[in-house]
Length: 290
Length: 224
Image 1 (cartoon, rainbow over the protein chains, first blue to last red):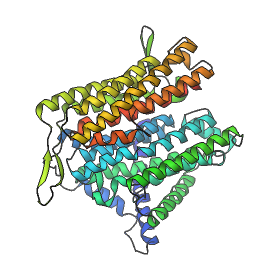
Image 2: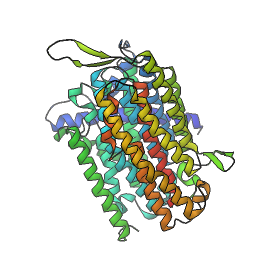
Image 3: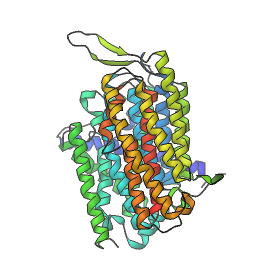
Image 4: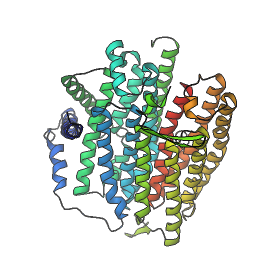
C-alpha cells in the first residue's frame, strides 16, 4: 500500500478506536460505580463537537505558544502512529514521543496564565516518576531481545514466545504507565479535580478538539505498543480483544481508587517501579530469563 | 551494538574532523522537535500569570515578565534549545557531556532573573546539585577515554565494555541524572516551574527530558 495512504488510514483507525476505547473506559467506570454512564460513542462525539465550537483565547495567554502547542500535541502522536503501527521502527522514538507528549501537554496549561494550568504544570514535573519505569521497561526489552526495532521484537517473540512470560515485571512497569495515563487514574495528579481540568482548563473550541484528538490517538498507541512488545505477533482481532481487556482493567481500577495526593502518587510509582526493576534484574541474573 | 539497531537506519553523518554528527530517525525526531520548539520560543511572548486570589479580597494577583527580563530569558532559552539540539545528534561522548553541562547552566540562567524567592531558592538548590554532578559526568567520560582511547560513539559501540567502561558509564549516568534534575533530584527543580514565562519553562523541561532520552541511547551504545 502507498505509504501516505497507510499513514492516513492508521491515523484514522487510531483516532476512532482510541475514542471508542476511552468511551468504553468511561462506561465501565460508571457501571462499576452503579451509574448508567454516557454512551460509548460519547467521547468521539465530544471530540468532533469541539472542532465546530467557537474558539476563544484568554487575555493572559502567551498566544503563539498557547495555540501552537495544541497542534504540536496532535502532530507528535501522528509521529507515534508512523513510528509504531505503520513503520514498526525503534522503540526509542516512541519513548521520545511520550516525552514530548508529556511536556507539551502540561506546558499547554502554563501557557494560558491560569493558576490551575500552572499548578498542573508544576505537578507534571513531580510526576516525572512515570518515565523511569517506562525507561526501565524498554531497556529490559532491549536486554532480552537485543534490539530496539519493533519489527524485530515481534519476530523475536514469534520464535521465543511472548515477552510477558519472560519479563512479567517489566510488563507490569509498562502497565503502570498505561494506568497513569488513563482517565481518572489514581496517579492523574495533573488532572486532579481541585485543578478543575488541570492543563486543559483554558483550552476550548478547536484547540480542545485537537487535545481530544491527541488523547484518543495516545491511548490507542500506548495500548498498541504494550500489546506488541509483550504479547508478540497479534492479529487485528487479537489487538482488539487486548485493547478492550486492558481498557476494562484500567476502568475497573480507576473506578475503585481515589486520586492520590502528589506525594503518595510519586512514592507509589517509584516503589512499584523499583520492585519491578530489581525483580527483573534478579530474574535475569539468576537465569530465570533465558 | 551499532547506531542502526538502536535508533533505526542511519540516515547520514556530518564529519567535523574527529567529531562525527550522525542522524538516524530517532535522533532526527529529537533534533527536529527541539529546533521546532526553539523557533516557537523565539516568536512567543510570555503569558501573564494569574495567581490565586489574595487573602480577604476577590482580587487576583497578576505576575508579568518585564521587557528586560523577557529579552534575557528568551536569549538564554534559544541558546538552551540549540545546545540541546546539538546534544541530540552528536556522535562524540565528550561533546555530549559539554552540551549537557551547558544545558544545566542555561536552565539556572533562564530563571535567575525572576523576582520570586521560592523560584530563586529552587534554582540555587538545583545549581548545587548540577555543580556536584558535573564531577561524575566529566569524570565518567574521562575514565571511558582513558580505558578505551576514544570518545567516538561509532568506535565505542563496536568495543567490548571492560569493567572500567562500565564504571565510567555508571558515573556518567549519575552525572546526567543530577545535571538534568530528574528523579531523584526533581524535587529541587519543580519549584522553578512556578515562575511565569511558559515558553521559557518548556525548554527547561524539554531539554532535561530529551537529554535523558538521548543518554539512554548513548549508554546502551557504550555498554552493549
